[in-house]
Image (cartoon, rainbow, N blue to C red):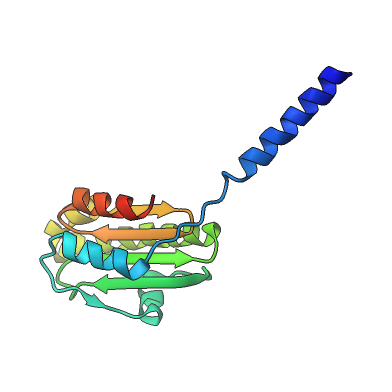
Length: 154
């Protein structure tokens, strides 16, 4: 009987311990990360900021609850862009991640005939999600971009 009680208690402690691991909220300075990508990675195009309403139209973020965001878009001559988004919940960041993946695929279709050289950037696009944050970087330096993103999304 004591063994059963001990095992039941052990199982409860394990379950309680694991529930804390499932959801992770990331406390990142969104604008600082976007600026670090902009200054730490070389871009061929001039990147300009866009607001969330414009980004909603470009990226089709659906109903994700975005709490903070920073966007840098190219002139359209290249596929280069930076997107850093913090959401209310981890599930919202998953929706954003899917939208970022869809955006990269749409850009591949657009640039195939327009500027085929941009496909290399798009094929190496960095899309990263950690907890409630999602990030996209399209550049000629994906390794540098990933290192910067990883340093912020710990």
